Image (cartoon, rainbow, N blue to C red; front, side, top):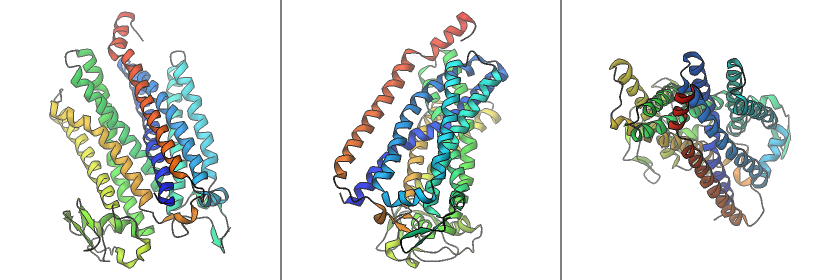
Length: 447
């Protein structure tokens, strides 16, 4: 592969692997907190079992998120020295503050894991809240570097020299709030549906064991509730993000929708693929005027097309497919949660039919696909810039050779880590099934 392509592929592979564990690291503490609050309120020990089992899984996943995050940080320095020079002088604050966020998360995780049965209910709740805050803060702070890449602020480059540095202006760049909100609500959405997916699968496997089935049904309801609420918030944030692109990165929005000509009453197209030669979206479903409304809350909004930008500024046009993946999957997840709400609350049905359960099962993997599509869209859609309109990716890449060998070595590391985490989780939960915890509850009156 080309030197630049190899460097981008290596870092993209690292982030694609890391983002799964980072997302789980943000979302799982909220699920644990909800289970803990329900336990303290209802005294139903099933919720205590959930919290203790989820915290064990969280600990294992965090053990993978930490080294992969460290690898990502190292690769930033090794692969993108030009970019890190800017970061070192302008945008180092998020990295510095993130250390304290991780310290809070690790400290209270240790307290909850090793002393949950020896501390007061209030301290248990405080511990999980601190874990959730630490995890979300870490994600927001690191993601802020990505926000800075799209909307750089707080410095200027004069004759190749970085001048007029204002660290706080760079920190609170125009994309900070939108990006921070999106990374958190999308993580909660994803983890909610992952929990629902696992619970639905277990419900299909345990129909004959009423106690185990009831346990997993409670977990399913929590997952669908969290997933449904935050999928709606993700949709609202996505609308705001589209308007943000319209204002700050118009060629990215045009690429996402395959819009070549500047126009008002611009259509939004779902599905299909971008035909560059004919400058159209083929085989897509077109919604007239919808893109103009999405961009500016008015059908009269004029959306700038790709042809108004130099060809070398165009992002890769396959981002249309990535954008569609996010929109379609997000819409499906929201409708699925709404359907489950209607089924249980309005129709008063206690049991879900198999078709529903299978839909819940696929919701978790689909949510992960949406997260991956979103990150690839966000980073690839910014190309050819590593810092928008200030530094091209080709200007920041390392000149070191033999990146191809490193690419395959890191690929091997991720394969080993992926297999290891699956085996560890499978081994632990197979040796400690829910039925065993419920049996202990019945025999001892507690956990």
